[in-house]
Length: 139
Image 1 (cartoon, helix red, strand yellow):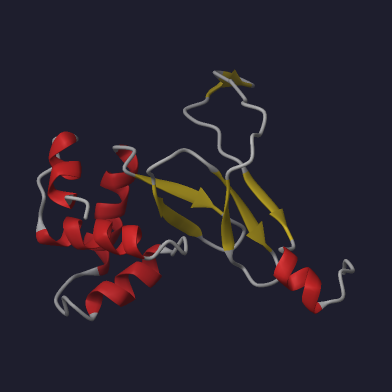
Image 2 (spheres, one colour; image 1 turned 180 degrees about the vertical axis):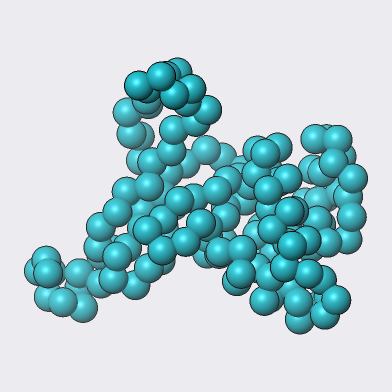
């Protein structure tokens, strides 16, 4: 079992009970949830937790590269980062899948005068399960 307290302390983050619970939730629920989904689930354990606490915690964890923000067409989602990987978003079922295939690395420092902080792949399409439901055809 991972020590969430150690993960936070290693990044000089005070390990509060709420931060630990958010991190634990992301580690145990690898479904790329949105902040609202995380909030609703954690609220069952901590009825007094505020939505702002969850959002602030996710911001802090993201800034410290403990979790990754995944930008999808329908929501900002979160992923516990153990090993760098990319993502595939299905426009039909709206699930996000981890992609471990080798993709070309983009090293961009600047674009049209904007400083680039990071580049992430989120491939958008129709997942194989949804394709099978439609007989393999595209809509």
